[in-house]
Amino acid sequence: MIPAKTSPRNRIRRGFTLLELLLVLAILVVLGGFVLVNFVNVGEGANEDITTAQLNALKNQIQMYKINNKEWPENLEQLRDGPSDPAKKARFRPLINEIPADAWGKPLSFKMEGNGFELRSAGSDGQMNTDDDIVVKGP
Image (cartoon, helix red, strand yellow):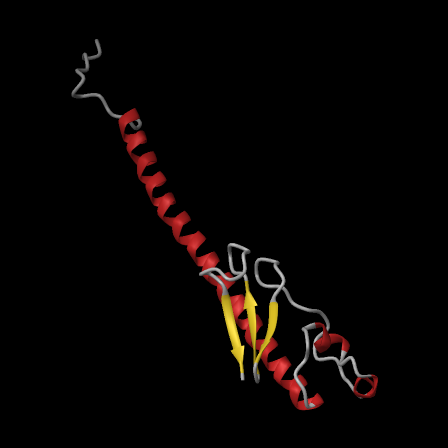
């Protein structure tokens, strides 16, 4: 028996065409772009939230220092090392083990303002006194 000739219409497809593969690849690239952009923004927001939480915790430690020592600290190091007055230092208990940095690894700024204080992080750009700074003020 002689096999019948198959026409192009009767052939069974056994794979994808190059056009179909390129179309799927293009869709994956577009979706990947959306995921990457959203992932980067989530990470930046997380760093800001972490730094705000650190500043608020440090604010509480500064207020505790004021309650225990009847005066504000002159700098953040005094939360760890104690007051400069030897009489007060003798009864001092450290409030922190180390001075924290912000989520970007940069040092925090502490400044007295009248009867209160300001804690500041330089934010994502690493420059103080710019729009992205994270600031927490105390009474």
